[in-house]
Amino acid sequence: MKRKITENQIDTWGKLLRIHSNSTVAIESALSQNGQISLIWYDVLLVVSKAPKKRLRFAEIADRIVLTRSGLSRCIANLEKKGYLKREKCKEDKRGAFAILTDKGQRALKSAWPIYRNGISEMFIDRLSSEDITKLNEIFDKILMPKR
Amino acid sequence: MKRKITENQIDTWGKLLRIHSNSTVAIESALSQNGQISLIWYDVLLVVSKAPKKRLRFAEIADRIVLTRSGLSRCIANLEKKGYLKREKCKEDKRGAFAILTDKGQRALKSAWPIYRNGISEMFIDRLSSEDITKLNEIFDKILMPKR
DNA sequence: ATATATTAGTTGCGAGTGCAACTAAATGGA
DNA sequence: TCCATTTAGTTGCACTCGCAACTAATATAT
Picture 1 (spheres, rainbow over the protein chains, first blue to last red):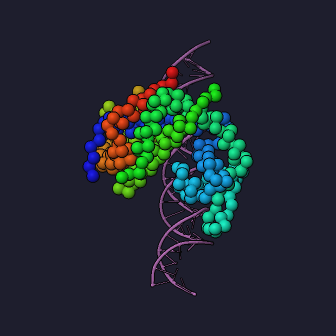
Picture 2 (picture 1 turned 120 degrees about the horizontal axis):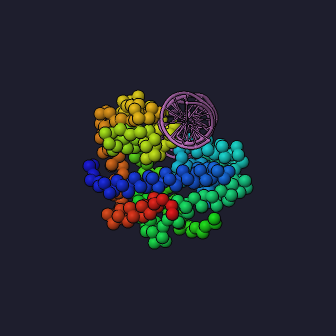
Picture 3 (picture 1 turned 30 degrees about the horizontal axis):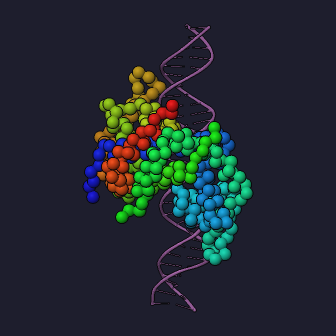
């Protein structure tokens, strides 16, 4: 169980943490200052918008984003209160429900995207060459591969 | 202000988010299950432990970790309550204070490190070759470089 | 058929967080 | 010197989160 790990490797890990923090803080702040929805709301609306018929079961949303079931439950309640999506009881499984993107939700996504995109560019993409991006994608895929 | 950004680039960004989330959730959970301090406490104690004489001004801690001043203030209060560090009024600037690592804090760091290290290995390092790490370090440095 | 276990989503609770307002001390001009 | 400004850290407040307990519905086993 004891693993060797070098200073160098720890540094890489530390840099990942800092990049994530710098970027998300900057983007969150830009969204908020421009009167746009938060990152987490964006994520939820986005996965729903990508689903067939723009509707998705709650559990499937939770699997795709960084939020527990209970967190998602409340998040969806807030999104519904704002009119960005609505719930619909699931006929086949009466325990469950669908989240369905509304037109207002679609517009909120569209309106937030330029700010979000700009943040990703500034904090991340613009600082790299296209070779860097290719290489990063490769390496990230390795990391995300399920453990053997 | 309008920037082009490709699907591919967005994917890379998304993978970064997922890697960060997967890793920190796994490590946080491992620490907790093994009765160790949380990641954020670890970070705070670590930066203090690295400082000369194991003491650091609050503002300097906040600059180095992912926490606002107010968050840090309360975090330090909790760490002090547990005996992991103690405060000391700053003689030169009576507004300020130092956080000083205690022996108990040092032991907590030492005891948590194998779990933390193991998490970093499993979720990150073990999945990459040493060339990958080198390349990642290079690319991460570019991203972290202050904007021109 | 019926009891048991599992699953989907909700909710009470305690803990943590950021923002803005606050206190106390230091700094900088006029 | 004296007053305005800035800075270090704290705190009230509102909000969010995860955990665990809960309800309701479904799946499984006998």
